[in-house]
Image (cartoon, rainbow, N blue to C red; front, side, top):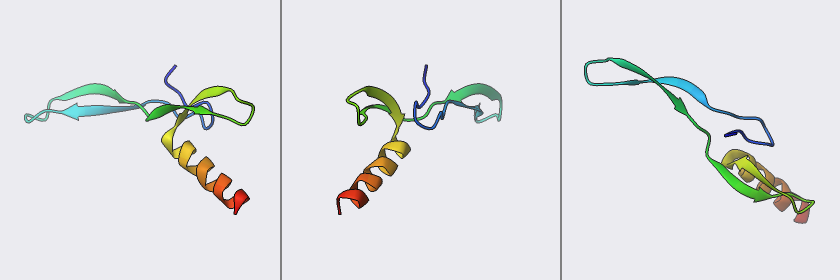
Length: 62
């Protein structure tokens, strides 16, 4: 599934518009990347969650 395991963000339904304004349904997917979490497990997470996690870890170590 193309869904973030941390926040649950999935696809967003939208329309593509041609020059004649004809609408075609399409899906916009989140930017998912593999990421290791604390227990060593790999999960698919959106980049927004990865950035948030990085900021939290930087705050803890500082």
